[in-house]
Amino acid sequence: MSLWGKQDSVYADGTVAISNLTVTGTGTTFNTAGLITAGDVITVGTGSTQGEAVIASVTNGTTLVLQSRGTLASGTITGASYNISERPVSTLGDTNYGAAEIYGVDTTEQGVVNGKTGDARKYAPAHAGWVGITTYNDMHGNLRVKTETLVASSSITGDAGDDTILPDS
Image (spheres, rainbow, N blue to C red):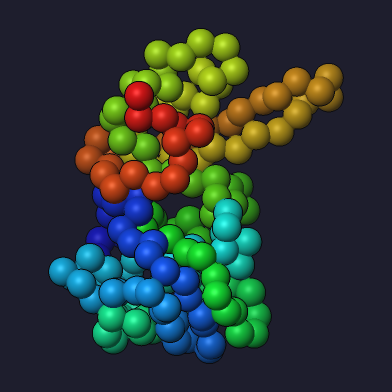
């Protein structure tokens, strides 16, 4: 795979268990139609609470091998939700944005959010592509939103579950 892809969500069915560098899926079909490839990123846990890593290979429908543990929690992980995407590998462990703060924004999402008003407009990215979005409260308690286009691309597809921030309509 290239340095980054265009799919925000490649695959997320079932749950996973991770021991060392082996990912074992339950209710998964990892090798179906070649959707998952080496270089894709697996984000584990709701909101990436258990970390993320880069996939080295797909063994079969229930087994993946990781390049390294990346930012995954130490020890064995069991029964975890996950998402596999083609997001930039360079964003793993980024100190500016957590894994749950990097979005694949397609042109539809960008247009919809840019057309909003008020607080919803605060999340509007300057460009479609891989975008970091983080929020914080300033010294007066006002919500501030920082967006940064990490990789500009108008070909993002495969919408992930980010529709509360970046709706499609």
